[in-house]
Image 1 (cartoon, one colour):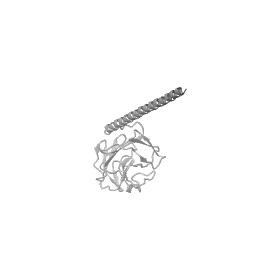
Image 2: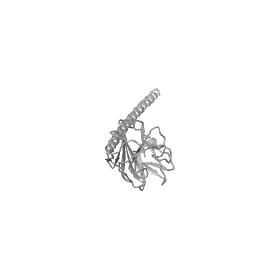
Image 3: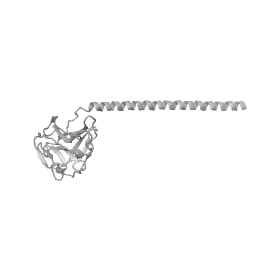
Image 4: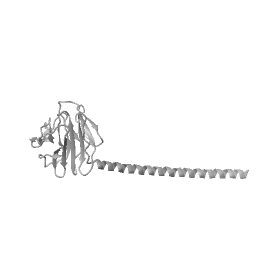
Length: 232
């Protein structure tokens, strides 16, 4: 009997050792699977980054409904997600296009209003591309002092906005004039629906230059020293 008991205990010991070995092997297999998954995820992220870099110079602006599409970019860097300050949620609504572009939908006709982007324009050159599609009511593009809070239902040329905002104006806001510090300056072309309007701000030079369908306009703004944000 003692011999049987000893053999039984020995078998239990061997079974426990085999179980531990099997558990250890399973753990190693799981760790390898996790490492493989992490490697695959890292490779997928690298692929996504490369794809995003390849898309930087592609224009993806084609509107089929009444809205405004924005694209914010820091030159020689990358596209930035667009965050917008909405002074009047009853009048403006926003939808994402692809994470880098946004549509602004104006819900009320025959009313004016100005929205600004949250991104402070520092450390280099920034671009904002805008395309209007609102039956010719259009609007404009420009910059605002970072510290200034734009009130609801007020245009960029209205007081007190006119002392804190500089803008390039199409229909409704103007006819191609550049408005700065309460003064309008003519010389740029007017623009309308479905054209690509671009503002290029250089924080080091303190300049704001405008483009219409890729053509630089002759009237631009210099001497900008404050921190600013884009407006539409």
